[in-house]
Image (cartoon, rainbow, N blue to C red):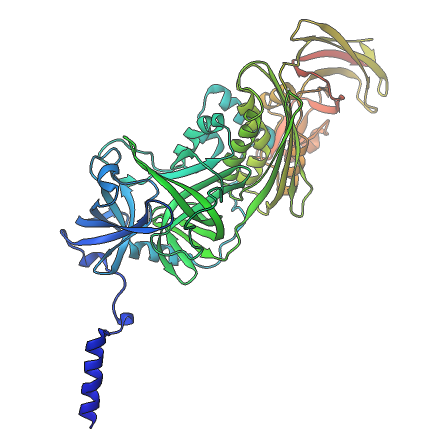
Length: 614
């Protein structure tokens, strides 16, 4: 009887085609050691719309130890459009299977190759490296590797000076650098298509080198969810081969990178097969995507895709791929930029940018530049006045204030100067920097409003402590008009008898002069001090008056201590100690006055010597 029952179930199983060995016992991954040249398999990706299609794969060989302790599978792809397009940007992460077992992700290619030959990242290398870091990652920007040796004023001054000398934007604005895109017979990671919407064409052109340096190929496209009334919208349920976008800016301006899902493990999504920026812990919106079309090109073909709905967040960005979690909330910074143009129209842009020390400065420069050039010209006379606030958690706000007037590079210079204080905070090594919101107001005028400080004079040369003298500043505008502004200046009480210097100049020139004479110490001691120094940065639309004497002083942590007793100077600045935050000064700033805002952007510096009577 038992034999009959067993025979019945055996026949039933064979008749219904039910496998006698459960799928759970069949390995779902194929290790590199089992892969041989000539093996054939299939890959999955989206070429159009949301439908996952198959393409064919023939193994050419395995490159052992291609990278440090890492192998690479070399394969020829075929089928669908690949015979005409070659390996396509946006295929990064496309899973490849042999005998139903996952071997890895399409992630590398030979630039300008006539054949669709690709490098496949072994799945074990993706899982092993990313699995090591699956613990919840910090979503706030990590601190830099070391504290800078320069003050906020020196950092911003050097940044603008390097830009004027012609340093490329990707070196100024981001420390994230991808492997360069090679034109030779070198297997390199597939460039990631970067889809940009809501930005001016001038912004995409100006910042293309920055994005290229980060491993992206910028393409102007539609914004998130812009493809409406779709016959078959993408599913919120990602699966191997699905198109997926990592969003860096979302809202009125959108910037997102497209790739492909390699493997799904519960709510964990493995994608790309190569690094995004290799930034480690990160937090970027993960969105399903709709591929409008494949764009065949002579150099390298690319998918044309737009993000749809945010369904989670990417949390890890490592050498062999990126890892996301469905349902996780990405960490983004809300930004509002209002631009009042010279035509008296106002445009407001609301968007979010990635909260990441590598990306935020670059993305903020891009969005500020785009907001300006969407309303104003790039060449010709232009004045741009920027004001705003950066809301910081558990700290006072960071004030943004800059003004530019000139003929060329106005939008770029303004963007760099506007974002420089944010860049300093995020890359300075100060821990605890949590940006909650950024609000900017930009007022544009299509003419120059500059003036040069020609000379200064005072009503007398001998003064006593506590006296008030009348200062006359003679300025000449860009139109040739000469005018005089007069200010009462009080001589500080308690000032020692002897020679005194009265120095008058615009904010930028006075700061530059201080840097040259070493009146700026190193980095502030902590975040609170850094914010305080950034909020005290001088502006170039007003004059500053400095009263200096010839007594020695010290700069300690960015604060100038004037007229110190010689014994204290000797104690703090001795050959037996060394401290980068302490610098001796041959003379001291006794008092500094900030004069009212002028309607001109002022340039120049002048000084006079006075005698202080007892």
